[in-house]
Image (cartoon, rainbow, N blue to C red; front, side, top):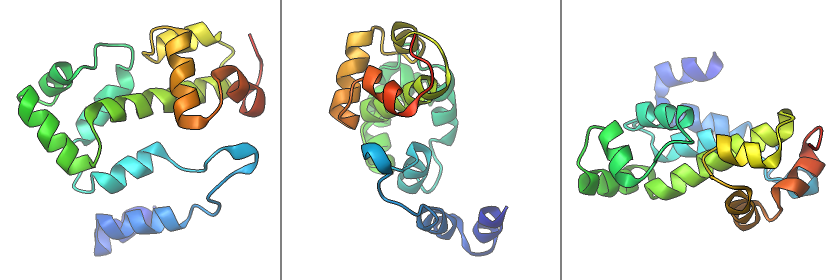
Length: 155
């Protein structure tokens, strides 16, 4: 509520700055960065031009999320979409898709008893090897190790 009041009084950018400032530790124990993909995305896309698209993405992580598919969801031409998206958010559509899939996979590995193969399929990676490569590249650990450090049951 306080962030909404700040946004209403002095603007969305100020509310984002306060939200970032409230994150107390840059690193959590065990090597896990403490950051919010959503907060980072909102900071980049401060005008909120692609908010509806990002909401749609989270619900369709296992769908075809190629540039033409995203452009269609955003009601733009593929070429214009890719250019404007990069300019507005500071990252490519493919990078955003990968980060949202990683965030969803992390959450499932922390909370759900699903197998790693099932998590990979549900979050759009397709198979566990593709998800493993994304985890190692972005987080420095495999999904199995991530679940062991931050999750509950291993299935």
